Amino acid sequence: MCGIFGIITNQDTISVGNIVFEGIKRLEYRGYDSCGIVSLSNSKLYLKKDSGKIDEIQRKINLAEIPNNSKLALAHTRWATHGAPTKINSHPHLDCHNKIAVVHNGIIENFLELRKELTQNGHIFRSETDTEVIPHLIESQMKKGLNFKDSVIESLKLLKGAYGLAVCQVDNPNSIIVARKESPLVIGIDEGKTTYCASDIPAFLPLTKKCYIMDDDELAILKAGEVEFINLLTNEKVKKELRTIEWSIDAAEKGGYEHFMLKEIYEEPTAIRRTLKISKEQLKIFANILWSAENIYITAAGTSFYASLAGKFILTKFLGKYIQAIECSEFQTQLTNSLKKDSVIIAVSQSGETIDTVEAIRWARSYKDVKILTITNVVGSTLTRYSDNVIVTQAGPEIGVAATKTYSTQVLTLALVALEIAKLRKVELESDIVKYERALRSTPQIIENFLKNNIDLIKGIVDTLDKSAQFFFLARGISIATAKEGGLKLKEVACRFIEGYSAAHAKHGPISLVRAGFPIIFIAPPDETYQRLIGNVMEFKARGGKIISLVVESDNVIAELSDLTIKIPQPGDKYHNIFSPITFIPALQLLAYYASLLHGLDPDKPLNLSKTVTVH
Ligand code: M6R
Image: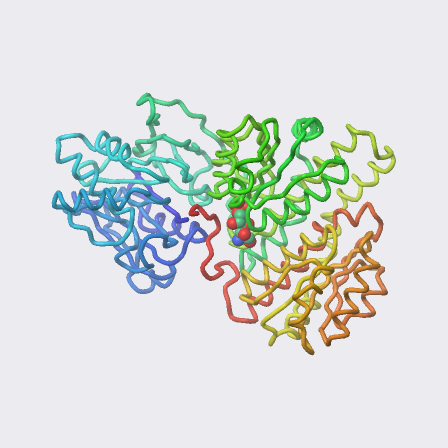
C-alpha cells in the first residue's frame, strides 16, 4: 500500500508546496519507506524524492520547497513491493524526457512484459518498479499523436492489475488525470478554486470537506476547482455524488496524543457509542439473512479475523448454527470443492481494501450464488461493491497501523447483529435479552473507567516485563480471540515474539518452552471456562511461568495465583462475560503500546507493516 496526494489550484495565495507536503504526511500511515513530490511550473517538472520517512527526507532535501509559481503538484509515500525502498525506486516516476510524472498505488501485474516491449522500442527505465511502465506507456501514446487524456486512457487499457494513480504532463499544466482500479482514490474539491486527489480522505480534510469517492474503472480529469469523471468501460461521462465529510480533521490527526495508536485506544468508548447507534433496520437485515441461512462463513485478515472469531462465538450462541471462520487468504483454497450455493459469507475488514478479503469475496460471488454481508469501517470501499448488504462501523478514521478501535467496533457490530437474532428467534427470555443489551451498552463506560485508573499499572507491568522477548497469551472459549488479538498487538508494535493460543491446547506442545520467569498472560473472565482455566494457570505456574492475569474486578482466585493482575472494572455475570472481547482488549492494546515505547519503537509505524495490505 502507498499513499498518493495531488493538488491543482488557481489560487495565488496558497502555498502548494506546504499543502502537498502536509497532505502526503497525513497519508504516511499507508507506507513510509520513501517519499517524493513533483511540481509543475514554467513547462518543467521539478522532482524531489528520496528513501526514508517523510520528516527525514524533509530535513535532507526540503521536499516542501517547490517553485513559487507552481499551481500543480503530486506526491507519493511508498511501501515497497517491486524494487527495494531506494531513492531511484521512489515515486513520482517520469518518462524518458521528464515530461510526464506518475504516482501510483497498487501493482501492475504485467509490468515485466510491458517493460520489455517499451525497452525494445527505445524507452530508458531508471527504476525497478512496476509503476515506471506507466509514464513510458503514456509517452509512447502521446508520440503517436494522441492528446494527454486519450494517451492515459489507451495506456490504462494495457495495464493488468490494480491502480490508484495520478498523472501530470508539462504541456497540460491545467489538469491532473487520475484513475482507479481496485486501489482507493478520493477527490476533494474547493469549488472554483482547488481540487485534490488522495488515497484517503484525511489527506485533504483540513482543506475541504467536499469530496467524491471514485469507483473502479473510473478516470477523472482534475482542473482547479472542477472535476469531470469518465467511466473507462463505456467511455462515457459519469455524474457522481458530491459528499460532505462529517468527521473533523481532529478525528484524523493526533489531537494532543503522542501517537495515533494511543489516541485511537482512548477513542474506543466514543467509537463504540457511535457504533451502538447503527440503525436497527440494517441490523435486522443481517439478522434475517443469517437466520434463514443454511451455511455461514466468516472471513477476514489479521485483527479483523480475530474480531470475527469473537463475533462468531457471540453469533453462534444466539443463532444456534455453526459458523465457519476461515482466513481470507485460505478461503478459496479451502472451499473450492465445498462452497454451497445459498451460503452466506460475512466479510470483515476495517479498510474494505485488503486484497485477500476482496478476492475471497469476489471469487465466492463468481463461483456460486452466495450472499455477502460486509462489515467495514470505510464507506464506498472496494469490498462494499461486492456485497449484498453492508454495515459501516462508526470507528472514524483509524490512522495507527495497529488496529485498535476498529477491532472493538467490529466485535460490537457482530454482537449487535447477534442480539437482533436473539430477538427474532425468541430462544432467550425477553428479560435476558434486555440484560445482554444493557451489558453491551455499558461497554464504553467500562472501558472509560479502566482507562481512567489503570495506566500506571499497565506501565508498571511493562517495566517488569522489560527483558522478556517471548510471551504466551492464553485463554479458553471466547477469550481465545482476545488472546490472539492482544498477542498480535504486542507482536506488531513491540516486536516481541508471542504465541496467542488456547490454554488447554498449550499443554500439547507450547508448554515445553516454559522456564522460570517465562511470561504468560491469561485472559480470564469468569465464564463457563473459568474453572478449567484455573487448572491451566496452575500447570504453567508449576513450571515457573510468570503469570499475568486479566480478570474482572471481583476475581480473587486467578488473581491470587498470579504474579501480576489487571482488573477490568465490570461485573462477572454471563451478560457481561460474553462481551469481554470488547472490554478486555484495551488493556492488552495499552500493554503493547507502552512496551513499544519502552523498546524505543514507533507504535504508529511497525516494522515491515502497512495499514492496508493490497498485495497477495
Ligand atoms: O483492513 P483490514 O481489516 O482488512 O486489515 C486486515 C489486517 O491487515 C489488519 O487487521 C492487520 O492485521 C493490522 N495491522 C492489525 O493491527
